[in-house]
Length: 452
Image (cartoon, rainbow, N blue to C red; front, side):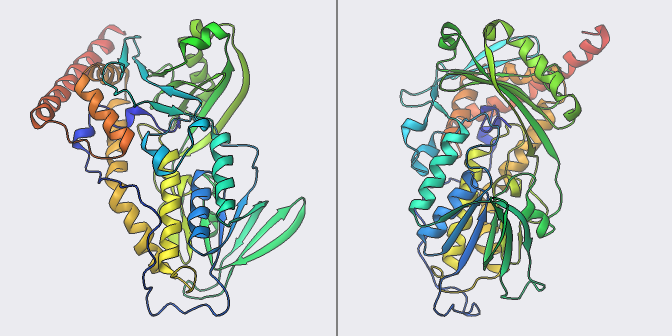
């Protein structure tokens, strides 16, 4: 929702089974299955639908690897509403230039339902560490331009239909029906990557199944200079029934304004009421500010039942790659797009051979699930434990006081690796977590008794 939040690993990063994610250049081309026919006189043709981080990263990998690539984006001038935080490792891994970063946050304030505030990170961050904050419209434009520079052809168009071959084993083309300036056009391709968000038309074309969606709502607010100065290197996260029944609210700084928002799964009909609650929490900090933009967008809550079908693969939000508990999506979108693009390059021997469904499942889907499936499941569990009521949220904020918790959280979030830590501290943290949860259960009962 507010893509990339530190709550994704809070207090539990030592227990994640996530594998180390090494920075990789595109994979070396290896011999594809001998059953894959060679393409005579042409290269494999791929269409990537959607030009956000997932689609642009996929298109760049495909084009750089020798695939004839078409990147279709409906609205290049707009972007999905997003908190805009990215992990530190993404700067190097995806060669994101520093001039794209609006703010380098060095302190995250986490505020409980009772307004208990924990400064998360100010004491333990290393000199070079921060949370990069950017605007999605800036990042998306940069990534699309880079994909074009690698050889992808950018098409500004609305995709209206994806015509799928009658047989999943057929080598017949997929036909992309789209409109350009109200003119109907078609494009025949061998492979399709759906990177077209939560309401993916590509997913519908392959009957990929439905998933639960949350809704994110945020207002961009331009503050007076003296108020903006407070947020120059600070971001805030608020938890409580007043801002969301199952998620959190946020204030994330941008270049000349702040993004104030919230999200929910179970209370979508009341999202504006939760946003009012969020504004009430921060009213003194944003007083005198002017709303310059209002945004809302659906956010997937779990992966789709089907992410590969025939020669079609889903990535990013279209696949459901947004973590529960934190709503982190930018990194996982770009990573899934790149992994999928590289998988197609590998299976097709640089665009020389046709690929099939088994190739996508083996080279993309299995690789992705091996790296991230356990992390997504774990964060799903955390959301159920710590966001279920205000007592649980108080417990979460209490745990965030612990400096060891903060160090392990930042290490896991920044570098997308399993923080090693200290075995004794791990055990102490485990007992502290259980103790805090037990106290929160008692607190919940007291709150119910006294109608707190």
